[in-house]
Length: 253
Image (cartoon, rainbow, N blue to C red; front, side):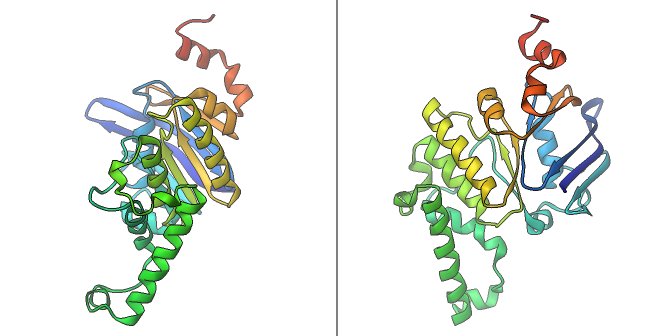
């Protein structure tokens, strides 16, 4: 049932141990949250999983294939996509064009065919545009298709970035603090959206500081502190874990 398996993962930067002997699994078809205070190692963990950083030691398996030595683009082609805490949309391009860029990772047309605008290249480009627009429609932002992505409101930019990640047809979607900068109404819409994405068959690993969002949508939660896993379980178990309470509230009360 495990789509992603992390086993005894370590990553050090000089004398600093950012991730220390972390192990957990993400079951297919679930929403799993990775939480912890600032500096806990959450973003480093994402970078290790996505191939942006190599681990010092340990194993990362995706669909039963070891990926800890693969490059980021090869991991993406296996069916893993991510969003970023700091939104990274391309200026000068519309929302639709930004989403289409995410879809191109699944394209088959070669450079020469695309440069010569051969019929098969045009057909594939039309298909990419159609499927990208369908994603904007699914996220209820189709009316923004022709607007420059970086000119949109923050919540709308977040939705465009998520659509771009979905355009790559991932089996596992990593969301890095998707609620950052959103107001309470936008966060409620985000919760519905993430649940909807899971319902269409995409597994989700989530890093998030908004605990109300985490507790509302997560099936399981992993808690990190100073690079170590200190707790794992369903939301109710994590809420009542005294070590987690101490870390977040600064005391036993």
